[in-house]
Amino acid sequence: MHALKHVVFVTILTLLVAGCSNTNQANENNNRTNPLDPTTNKTNDTELHDKLGYVKYSKHELNNSTARDKQLTVDRNEMADNVSRMILHNDHFLQVATLVTDHEVLIAYLKTDEADAEKAKNIARQSAIAIIPRYYEVYVSDDDALIRDIESLHNSSVLNNDYSKTLNQIIEKMENNENNSEDIKNNPRN
Image (cartoon, rainbow, N blue to C red; front, side, top):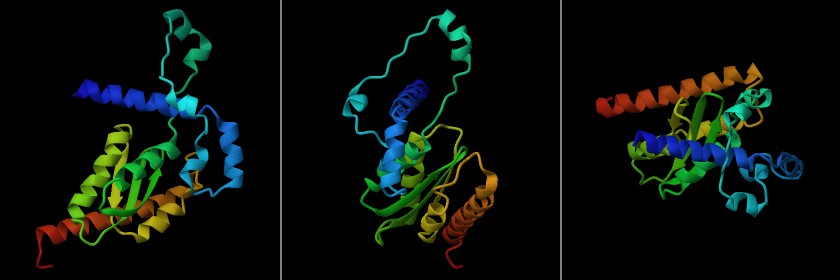
């Protein structure tokens, strides 16, 4: 089971890296379309999405300086898009906002009235955990007011720490929301 998770993780990362190869076209599309639309960073090259991922290195190639300087990159926009889409495939969700930083995934959603709150929270959390690298912290809230708060950070960069105060405030609200729902569940008279 553990090996399967690693295979899935490597496969997802390979697909994400392959999807990042056409940045010029994506930048042109961003200038003409809605910046909140996650599809603006996607390439129209269907052949790229149909190809399998494959690499082969020799020890000599791996030891040369350009290979050593290579860093693993993650397309945060693509991860946020995939998490939101996976959650919305469940009938109990009406709207989902997902923000992926360098260490956190924040998910706020609007669910249907008949959806069980705890089950919805678990679906959202498990959807993110299935897609993102293991070291990410996942925060989930059914407080749909947080959708706007998360959206306010959509243009932020992990290289700029100006967003960290707002990010920490949102995380605190999400944790308080989760703690309050646990208190209500454990003490239904409150």
